[in-house]
Each structure stands twice: as C-alpha cells, then as structure tokens.
Picture 1: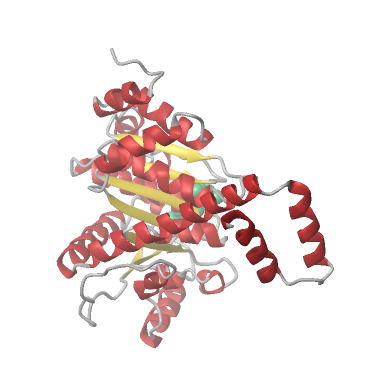
Picture 2: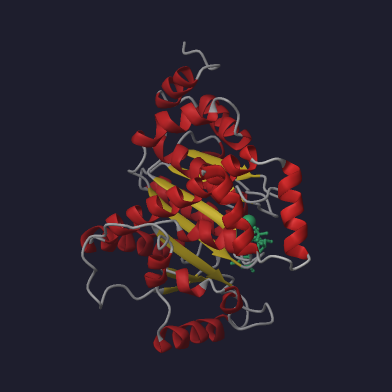
Length: 339
Ligand SMILES: Nc1nc2c(ncn2[C@@H]2O[C@H](COP(=O)(O)OP(=O)(O)OP(=O)(O)O)[C@@H](O)[C@H]2O)c(=O)[nH]1
Ligand SMILES: [Mg+2]
C-alpha cells in the first residue's frame, strides 16, 4: 500500500488508478503546498497523450449538460474521460439531465470518469496555471480525453479553453444577441461551434449568424499563434492554408441530440491536428505559454522577496501620482534584483 503522504507514494497510487490519490494530488496542486512542486515534476513526463478539449461559452448556454453528454459518448467508445469545470455556477449532474436512468447510473459510479470543479472565485492570477496543472494531472493519470469547461467571459477563462487541442464554443439562441461570443472575442478560438438549445426558437438564426462570420473569415484557431509570442518557439512547418473550417453543430444537450455528431467532429479535428502537424505546434505553443506564465510568476516572487515592501509601496505611490511611469518603475525594481 503506497504512502499517500509522500509525493512518490501518491504518484504510485495514482498510477495504479487510485482515484482517492488522484483527488489528493489535485488538492495539493490547488493549494500549492509543499508537495505540489515534486508532484508536478513527477507527473509532467507522464502526461502528453490525452486529447484536451476546451468547452467555453456564455453562462447558461448548456456547457455542463453538453459535457455530460460528450463524456457518455466517449465512454461508449471505451475512452476514459477527465473533466475540469472552472468556476461552474451550475453543478454537474453526472448525466442526470439526460434522463436515461441506466446510463446515468453508469456515469455516476464509473471509474472511467473523473470530474473536478475548480473553486476560483476570489483567486487572482493563478487560475490559468492551476487549471493547466490539474489538466496535466488528469492527462498523466491516463485519461484519454480531458474536457475543460470554462465560462467564456473573462480573458483568463478564454485563455484556459484556448490551450486545449480542440476548442468548442457553445452558443444558444434567445439570449438577446444573435451571437453572444462576438463581444467576448471567443469566436477566434473556436475549432467547433455548438449551437445548443436547438429546441428553442432562433437556433437557425444563430447558425446563420455564425456561418456569416465564418464566411467573412477571421475566425479559426490561427490566433493561437499569438499565445506563445513572448518566447521563441521552434515550430514545425505551417499547415496547409485550406486546413480546417470550424463546423457548426446544432445540439439539444438535454435530449442527447446532436452529441454523437459533435463528438465525431472532435475526433475529426483530433485527426486533422495529428496529420497536419498542428498538434505538435499547439503543444509547443502551450509549452511556451506555460513557461512564460511560470517565469513571470517566479520573477515577480523573486522581485517581491528581494525588495522591502515599503520601497515598492513608495514606487506604487509615485506611479499613482504620475511622478514616474509604470514601465520605468518596473525597470528600476528589476535593476535592483539583478545588480
Ligand atoms: N431547452 C434546452 N435547455 C437546455 C439545453 N441544454 C441545457 N439546457 C438547460 O439550460 C440550463 C443551463 O445548463 P448548463 O448545462 O448548466 O449550462 P452551462 O453553460 O454549463 O451553465 P454555466 O456553467 O452556469 O455557465 C439548464 O437548466 C439545462 O437543463 C437544451 O439543449 N435545450
Ligand atoms: Mg456549467
């Protein structure tokens, strides 16, 4: 019996499929306690095989219900599924919303499914990195598909979803705006669109609005290339220009309609990424983004540790009073830590 109070014991148990160990590992990572670093270091080389699926969209569009349905569909193909819900306002049902009692029971007690909600209200900054670490942990634990649900409102949530291999943007009719996501700028990250609540009036108008957007161009996942821009990345050759046009799928998540086609589209996109070499590109860009985020945190911590708080407070005051600009102030602080 592995010792669950040590990093190596926890990793050994996790590798045996011990779900309690997995839950503990995630808690250590979320709390960023003494075991977090050794756990991440041990798990990172094990990860990389999972296909990461981001699901984002305006509040209440049916993301969780869709994710439940997708998880069931993957399970029926024999694939294991990890789910990370970032700041969900509505809980996961474990499939209850599908109203199919037999399958509902299958999902609830199924060791091939692991669901984790991230409590994020009030947490500043670290959300994106902690989520990436939890996703990596599920990947390392052997889940074949990891689904990340985020509400597409904040920049960090969008960033999280866009670090996935396949990003699904969920729209729903009747929210007072034809295409909710335009404002939030999340159309740019879509690989697949789901127009959920297709049982409601206006679904076809939403589909048409999306089709027009796509025809006008400017969408697609090309923008992902910006994510790693702060660090040099050695990228494989660019994929063919006629690559991937985001398909639009109508779904009624509560009745399990359109989910099979949606899952097929995910798998098609997965195949496309692999064949085109884009999977490698995205993995490298994700590595660059991650390294940049961690580096930024490390340098910040180092700076804050090296300089007396009163000196920093005085500089903040000077910036607020416009006696110095924030760029020069930051340079002054950095110079003090490196000299
Ligand atoms: N009519 C209809 N209702 C749906 C459909 N899908 C989901 N709903 C309902 O919409 C509500 C919100 O569903 P959720 O799955 O919680 O939506 P969500 O996008 O995860 O919500 P947040 O996480 O709070 O942003 C629930 O009451 C669902 O039952 C659908 O296809 N048709
Ligand atoms: Mg939800």
